[in-house]
Image 1 (cartoon, helix red, strand yellow):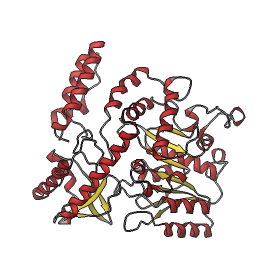
Image 2 (cartoon, rainbow, N blue to C red):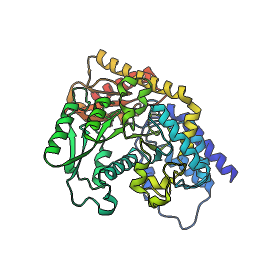
Image 3 (cartoon, rainbow, N blue to C red):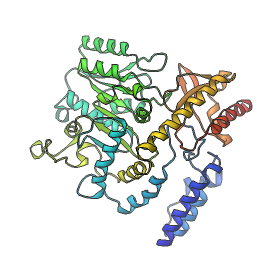
Image 4 (cartoon, rainbow, N blue to C red):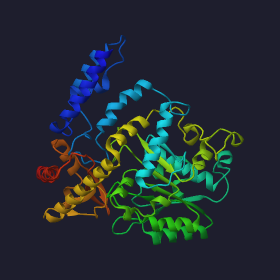
Length: 453
């Protein structure tokens, strides 16, 4: 068994070492596709040594591309080396971190506190939990907000009474809508708030919509702001939105899944984030913690516990050290040992290392924006606030087809989006080893792909 584990570790190390020299992404051959999708369940098992050879031959050659310095797609980071190194140890322990007295539970308390300290969010013991990602964090946050608005919702459901309405910007992430629909709020009661020229929530329009809904007999209960949107990296005017939330008694949720860490280098842009009732952030994004790992931070630890706990209130002591089990704060019961990967990543980087990573990638995105402005065949479409640059190639009609064309060339990877109703390109920079030379390659690859089209 020791030899097999050593072989697996060697394969992982060799793969990571070779990533910068391999294609960012490549199509899968028909033969290998058949192996990946059509193999029958074997009647007899194969030795682990043979399985590792098959992983080497059929799996490792076809990555998504996230580990490459020229992967600029979506908001997917390379895995931290520290996180990769400890992942097998968490698997070897294989605990359920639903609760109990063991290292997985106690270490999660520490890393949640560390994350809160990094982004300047007020933290009380029990005021946070690791999740599979921001989608689950959002479900927990909206559940807590719904429970506060409707204290009897766990018993009566959403039946009767005025409908709850929530507010998100036109650039808000789809996980907000999914969570609202899943919780029975109904998409008809989601208010999409327009954005300004910089793709930030229009606070005056938010205020108007809330007042209009109150006049119509509806019950506004939550506003969700973005601290770094996926399309452009825009940060909503959080301080002003917090003011509207206070004025109308709304739960103030901030989606900082990607961008919350930007406060380390541009705190003025994030003023008001610390006033949120809940903040979602993803360590598996900018920090590079290997997937999956999200986090929810909450101002009041009792709020999610009230939404999910099945422990009777008379057995709980929220004012003491009785934090209960993590499973009281979430729909999840059996939970993996996510904290070890977060701990290793943060302990390896330290606060200074995290700040350097955010600073470096943000500066590179700003430089990419400058290169786009300086060119005569690209157009910048939004201010560069975090580590995302949104732009387009001219002529505009080829932009919709460009991302796939660039990906297939194998030297860079970017994705597209739609801004102001038109196809656009976006590059998200999260890799600590990306350089300005890689940005030059990216723009040249777009030009070359456009000529092919």
